[in-house]
Structure formats: C-alpha cells, structure tokens
Image 1: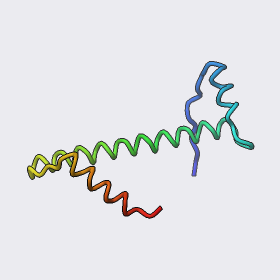
Image 2: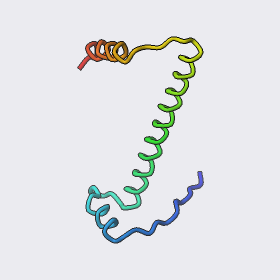
Image 3: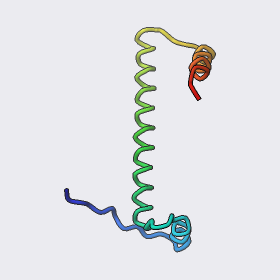
Length: 86
C-alpha cells in the first residue's frame, strides 16, 4: 500500500518545543503528530455519529409522537449504572 503525506505545518517555536517536551521515550515528533491527527479524526467521527443519532431520534419522536421526559431517561440511566459490574 502506498503512503501519503500530510501537509507540512508551520508553527511557532514554542508550540514545537511544547510538543517535543511531552514526547515519550522513543516517540518521534512525526509519530506524535500522526497520533494526534488520528485521535481528532476518531473524536470528530464519534461526534458526527452522536449528532446523527440524536437527529434521527428527534425525527422518530416527531413521527410517532412518543417523547420521554428527562426525569424518566435519567432514572433509566441510573438503573443501568447500578447494574453495571465494576
């Protein structure tokens, strides 16, 4: 599989120094940046999926007319948390 590159990035020297100061043993700055990009991609995909589920739930509620109070939802979440093994 061929690889691709991300665009080079100009930053203030302080930002580069801050990034270098938190590198783990054996970790390169390139590896750190790649990990940060991967983390942001996952977070944004998760956020987009969450919003899509919320919008779908809203649309379903509008279609069915079935709504739940915040109190009922929180109560159900409390039950689920109480059942979760530690």
